[in-house]
Every structure is written in C-alpha cells, then in structure tokens.
Amino acid sequence: MNIEIEKLRKQLPEWVKSSVPHSSAGKVASYIPELAKASHDALGITLLNTKGEFASAGNFEMCFTMQSISKVYTLILALMDNGEDKVFSKVGMEPTGDNFNSMLKLELVRPGIPFNPFINAGAIMVSSLIHGSSQQEKSERILQFFKELANNNNLKHDEDVFHSELESGHLNRSIAYFLKGNGVLDGDVEEVLQIYFCHCSILVNCADLARMALVLACDGTDPLTGKELIPHRVVQIAKTFMTTCGMYNASGEFAIQVGLPAKSGVSGGILALVPGRYGIGVIGPSLNDKGNSQAGIELLEKISQEMKWSIF
Image 1 (cartoon, one colour):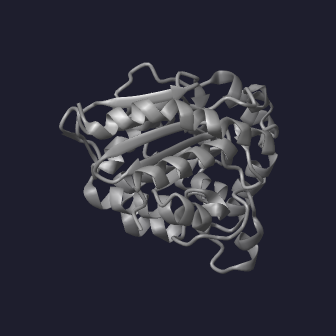
Image 2 (image 1 turned 120 degrees about the vertical axis):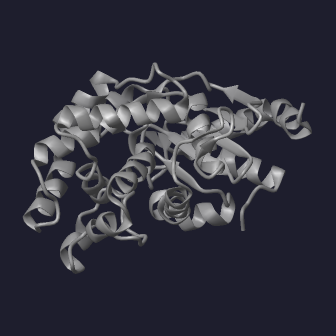
C-alpha cells in the first residue's frame, strides 16, 4: 500500500477533529430553505488516488447536493457540445471580485456577458448551452454525465432541494431575465432555470466528489477504468477556472493558503484535486461570508500544508 495513503488514513481523523471547531465561525446557508436543515458542525472528507486507494474521515458518508460544484461539469459538457468559441462568446474568463450571485457588472461592463462560468450568471448562461431537444432531455444528459464521472449509477436529484430552489430563486430568476433582456441568453428563461436548479440539486457524497475530481486530476481519463471521459483541452480550461474562480471571491486567498484547483458549493461541499495524484471530496455545511465551507477550507489548508501539495 502507498505510504502516503497510510499516513493520510492515520492523520485524517485528527485533522478533521481539529478543524470541526472552525464551523462555529460560519453559518449554514438558509436562503435556500432546504439547505438550512444541514448539520452545522458536520465535517467529512474522502481522498482517492489513481490506484483506487482511499482515505476517509468524519461525516464522509453524508449526502448533500452539489450546488455550484456542478458548474465545473456543466461547463465541461457545454464545451464538449459547442466548442470554446461559442461558449466564450457568451461568458467571460475572468474573476469578478464580486459575490457569486451579484448582477452588478452585467450592467456596468460591456458587452454585458457574465465574467466567468462559476458565478451564478455565468452558470445559468452555460446551462442554456447544453444540447438537447427539451429541458428534460438536457437535465437527463447532465445527470448521466455526472453518473459516469462518479462511476455511480445511483446519483439522483434531491427533489425537495430542487423545488426549494425553484420557489426561492428570485435573484437567479432576475439574473436570467436580465441576460435574456441583454440578448445574451437564448431560449425560454424558466426552462433554463429548471436545468440550472436541476444540476445544482444532484445528490452526492464525498466519495462521489473524489471520483469526479480524480478524472480531472488525470486530465480527463478515469484511471480506475482507463476510459477517457473528457478531452484534455477541456479539462485544462476547467482546472484553470477552478484555480482562478472556484472559491468565488476568495479564490486568491485559497490559492495562497491551499494551492489546489477546487470548487465549492453552498451546501458546504468542496471538490479539489492534486494533479495526477488525488481527487478530493469535502463536506462542511457551515459557510463563511464568501459562501465557502468554513471548516472545509481549514481542513484542506491543513492537509495541503502537511503533505506539501500546493501546485505553486
């Protein structure tokens, strides 16, 4: 067995235990009512290497919805469906410095397209680019793609979270109609929003995220099956966005303190990777003021520094 995995299995429980108290400095997301039901001090992690060896600790079996982590893979699917030129005529490539649900720069900065695919405006735009003859077909394609990446045919939507987002997503609805009014977003706004809320509400656990991250860590090939799932160039684009925009407007700080490509979601999930070596899935529902897992970031910082994993 890999010596590094042995060390991780030995140390992870203590690292998780020492990170849990940081949850008290954050709050569970409540603007989506269903998310407010999550345990405030839960914290779990799974790390998976290219040989299929894993290390887990804490509440790693806890199920949660992907939320914004799904944006990584809908971007990938949109790029595979349309190519770079079309996607990046509709959404930019730059960090914003604004909150993930801000509309500010859509009006202030020409030509009025979202700054990047990981803010809500950008992800809604990307959702509109997924191929399919109907909203149902597009959402099913996304789910099937996620199942293949996670090697888990049991992935499904959390219907309660989906309907909670559908009923409470007034700001996202405003963003989508603004994009429509700007002539950027094509198609029916409500159908696009359903696609967006659907992929945000896909249920996973830490092992699912770790497997999905491992595919990116290995440049688009699942090392445990040998199957190429994503073209190398598309993975390169996705990992670059994860590094520059993946942790919202705290991405620069995360790059300095942790130094790994990552993407967070407001359910408290974090997907991260060590290039060529590990996929990582984390859950910690208590969020900081930027919308990232308070204890999850603390845990990843501890692991990255102890294992000397920063890519910088």
